[in-house]
Image (cartoon, rainbow, N blue to C red; front, side, top):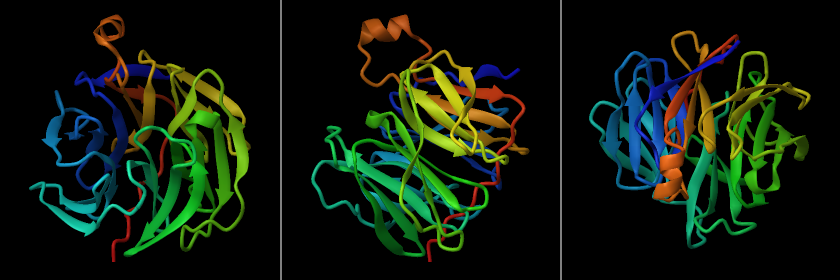
Length: 289
């Protein structure tokens, strides 16, 4: 039976983008709206909190010393030790009022990264493919693109449009990470919207249900096979963490809450860890060229 506990009691305005760095034995995640990067070992008492000059959403491992950070200011290499930032590419979505959102690294070393409107405008959501300096638009016409994750063999990608309450799957080339087919409906989500996701070693997709107090598990055929309740309503993204990748870190948010609502739900924005009978796959490094 999975057990849920609080990993970090630092309340994030919009906690998102968790990842595990095996070389550092540290978890990283963002508070997007407050422009912070959080860094924490699983036995630490509290996270280190790093201020950022932009709204960042994804930290993809490059090597033991660097992350590739995706944000509304573009792609930057960040030194994990010193925090220095070096721009690789300015922000790539030319439409005004857009920012980066969800993302994950394909086993081939390609970063899939989504963009969306700050005002949640329909049709402004896109997903892009980045690898070794090359950037391509691969999915268009969404609103809030989320749930980017990949099967362990690299042959299937998942993504969602949170406002549609639908998770999609699409075939991918395991060598390049590029789409090789058309999107198909993987599963429909009720009782909240699909947010961030990750896939375990058995090919099960674990998806945060925004507005639903839960992380849900779907088998490779799209059947709901498990649901883990969490104290926070706005659950945002899971990631497998720990030396054995057998713990599930889950971020949450108090975005949109006034003082009264925050007082009524003090669990909102905390970062949780779930212990259960599952195991993730080692996070691939992104190729930056």
